[in-house]
Length: 184
Length: 225
Image (cartoon, rainbow over all chains, first blue to last red; front, side):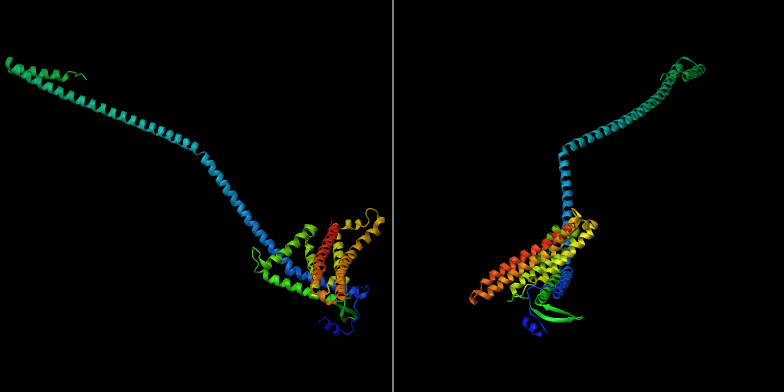
């Protein structure tokens, strides 16, 4: 294949291993241009895209690791919080019982106060009713005594005095009875 | 196999005679191969997965290893010139390996190695003036202005030494293999050359690629810092 190109060349000078002339400079220039073309091609086609891909992947993995770390920290905080709660549960129970006891005492005081007030009201009402009954009974007794006294006086006078005296005495007695002061 | 670099065509461009040598032609072949490989990788990149396997693994490993190597040698502020050296790395390595397939390695010709070394030299000057500005110029007169000629020679010697180191090493392999094929009987030319090619083309090639790239990176970093 190479010999075909050599034959195809119009005037192909003899080859050499090393030389320092214009052709060397031209050759260096061509190789430099080749290098620049290859660097641009490899850089844009391979190096940068692959590097960017790896960078994106590394960032993605880093972000996932950060998230996992944050979740781990949150979980650890939660575990610590529950452990603390478990440790303090006895104290909390005692505090709760004390609070309930305090509340019960306050409620019992309120209930007792209400009961006392109700009892006082009941007693007052009973005393009022007793006083009313006593007054009523006194009135009834007074009327009954008047009635009995009237009957006794009527019987007595019917035997001892005449009609006119009887009526006078009866009237006086009635008047006296009506004026009499009944003890309470 | 021949020691000399053959001239394949002679072109007349604007009245100037241009020899298209075996080196230039082989360079185009290698460029075609590398660009083809890059295009295949670029097409396959769309299907790349989070967990790499097979071909994706190879491409990622090559890019990642080189990027890490270039970034750690150049430093973060010069990392943007890494793509040029990625090309240099791939090209020199492919050139060395092309000998295995019977091609004359383009790096066994001084025009190739000097072109690459000259690019390094240009980058070195550019980075020096870009990042250090006047200080870089002052460094040529350090520690005393009398040292200017020596410092200048020292800087100019860098691309020359870089180019001749690679050229000499690659050419030595070519010479040894050419001599072996020319001087030994045919029956010894089966099997044994595999070892010689493996040593001179693969091992030496990889080693010289590494040396050329790391020296270039260090020269540039030295100029920029």
